[in-house]
Image (cartoon, rainbow, N blue to C red; front, side, top):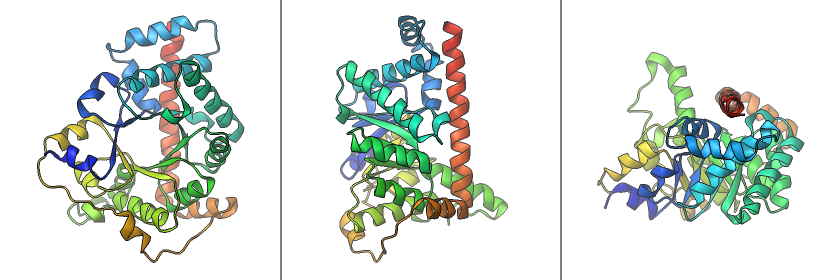
Length: 316
């Protein structure tokens, strides 16, 4: 049995892609998208007709509304292929505006509902800023489930758990990237792999904390650079994996063991902590990696959101 099937015994496998034509071969339960993945998809000839058709159907509407129609259209196509949920992202340029994030999330959900999709099949993706977490708190209370993304630090995870969000996406690969770059020539790949990978350690710490303290928020490891990171997190609630790495797991037959276990985590000696706004901002500030990667992630998603705007405008 290949490792992708073995992994599915411990962990819900999610496909990290906007390419719904590619999804079926990996039979993931859920799928996640982001501005960069959607941008990549709309630039492919396979999806050009879908984009043109959606834009043409909504001509005359404000640009941001047309963008949301495009995002939801991709989500609807993905939901024809996966049995579970799709994650659709709020514009990253709203990452520091709680009210605007809530409004955009409600609009995305209304578009899904108008297309006959229930709230249980959609996660609204929001950056894990303080403002984003507070938006998610309010949305969850109204039954709109959220996926808090661009999560790099323990304080972000704790605040998300306290806000009652459905799911978090800690970014394994981007944490690994930062530590590797910062170490430079001193980086030892063998020493910093598997359970010692800094991204893997971050997700393991969050998983253990949540299970120890009965926090219901789902942990979905994201942004992987190699299958070793995935293998080291087997047993995590969910893992969202790119098609390239899904294919590598399918091509590997070695036995895969569970690495994270809820029962073991529940016995860990980990004190409970809490973060009000000032403490959250200070803790994030003290973590150079998380501060830099959160800011960079928002900037990159904002750039790609701008490019998507331009592509749509060119068709108007």
